[in-house]
Length: 195
Image 1 (cartoon, one colour):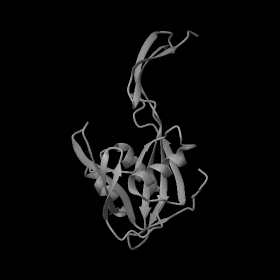
Image 2: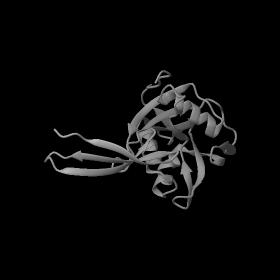
Image 3: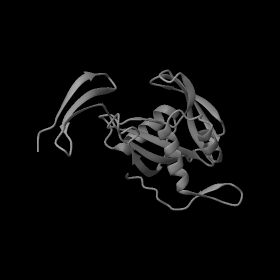
């Protein structure tokens, strides 16, 4: 088997552009360009029957929309769960001691090698307010709560700017069951503080 080679052709603070020269299954030479990014976390933060979201403007797509709390796994994070706890606090000012690992996905495997680790955090604090602001690395963040039963409608109406956020919410809802009154409750106790 012939050797493959990967070279960094461009560096940015957020990602590197990699050129990967390789041979396919038919021994034909190929080249592939992709973004080498740090892995990240997303948090489906729930308080009672409310989903905690961030309203944010993304200049790249020229759109204001909803996002889940989350961000990159940094060197100082010991694990993905440590990054999730840090990001939840940095972006919302909230903490949780009840966490559940929901899954891992690769948002754009034809473009980047980034993996996203998805967690559910149960917020025990009773949130009496529906909106508040925190200061994030990109400026002031507007934090909102919406009823979890409205999340699918928000996804359908293209109010979430990232398909990975929509995927994370659907993963969370797959662990829930709706009662006769339209309220959600946990089907399994899959919480683990050591993830």
